[in-house]
Length: 409
Image (cartoon, rainbow, N blue to C red; front, side):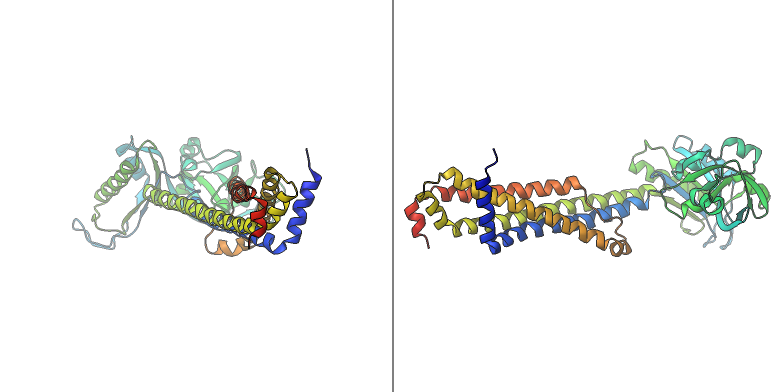
């Protein structure tokens, strides 16, 4: 049952000892606000690492060609390496059991228009498998398919922001878009977690781009995903073997770093996992360190408070107060101060994070936020610590004889 007199007495005690109450509350508020701020910053760093690779499948390998920097097999340096369709087919056949998806890319810069709207965009000419490498989400319509590749169909899949730019309030699927004077049918609209730049791209069948823009079978890049069942060592080994065999195929020196470049996300993913794991440990250290500091602060403050109230406790006992009632008053006062200060500290920490978010994002700390579950758990821990910190010295003080308590200096 709610005891009005008990709570009135608790609030009167807090009001009469404002400095003591403020110091107790400050310890809790500082601990929980610092916890929220530091945890939010570390969590923002984790988000930065996570979003850096959100656009591509984590088991991707990117193969780029360049110009030879060293002479090899009687061929001079400065030779341009040009990939063709047959090179993609060779990779697929040579490493069939290790390749999950594979595609080539050809890049084009075009001026796109629909009715009175016009803008410049980048076109990626690709194979159907590209959808799974890029983690492209088709909002409606469809993606490039094998029939488009075979028939060299004049179709495109446009990004969400391309549709917003050119088609305004009408839907794009089924309509025709003009790319450098050639009409293409829009068969799909996609979104991409990679952000605005990715959603301002246009995809078309690579065979169509090869026929219309160059009338050849050249490709700019070959991308693939390796079998996800490969462990880290096997994935790294596969990437190294792929690079070695490609260099042999094009008679490139194995020490030539410019002619053929293979970027394997397996190694980058491991680095990210190590970094996020390290940040996770940092979060635990920060969390426990902050909470321990808060608990120690609360404990010291409560010991001081009970010591300061020794005479008061003696008077209460002399007037017939039971040890239980004395403990209850001090315990509830401690819990109340901890709860109020904890929530104020939580609001302060979250508010600072929100205000500092634009500045922090300039330092590559993405969406610095903190889980309510974690912060509430930390707050509960501090409240529990406040209760224990208040109970133990109060219990000890309640056992003191009134005459001893009244003589206390």
